[in-house]
Length: 188
Image 1 (cartoon, rainbow, N blue to C red):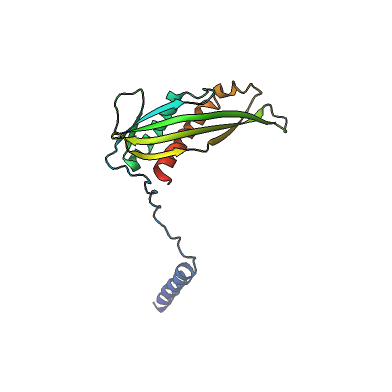
Image 2: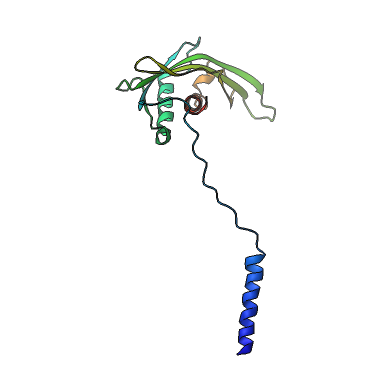
């Protein structure tokens, strides 16, 4: 009987020594950081109408597609911001209007691929100017963006044709919309 008690005591000491005392500490679990605070005063603003125009020399990007992309980007953040948006052609005036002007659209070819792959690197640069205005005319936010730079490897094409390439138009519009909404809501 004494042997069993000693064996049990030795096992308990071994478990405590090896398992409880010499293992590395468990990792600390931190809660996720809170979402960034909203940077503009959106009191009484629940619905935004998005209107896009193009004052660029060449009208490569579709203003209606950009309006829809911006509205979608606002709606994706609605769980955090409590804002909803719709593109200009949809019904309703909204509590505020987000006016976006496409100021410039530039596509420049870069160097040809050096590794034997076909195509050129193309750099796209799009500048926008945006203003969020309440129904009463007070400006909530305004920005003239220095431009979004976007690059793609495309087959050799004319600069006017690259804007219609499916690898350019849709991803570029989404990038512009997401960037604009992020800057409007979260960046001072």
